Image (cartoon, rainbow, N blue to C red; front, side):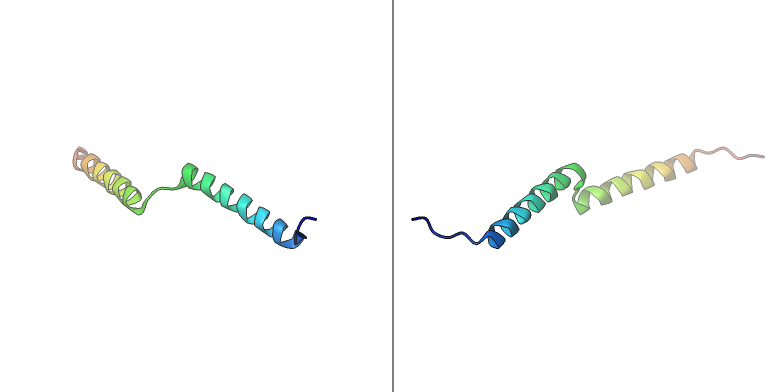
Length: 59
């Protein structure tokens, strides 16, 4: 005879596994490291400064 299975434990484990799978998908889709975000912000800021420095006077 097989061992009895706790259905609540099985249901919760399944829900946890689905939640982890969804989190892993979101990490791949949206996740970026802090260094990547800071590097992009620095690049955008430099581009903005360079562009502002090349503006002509309106006089």
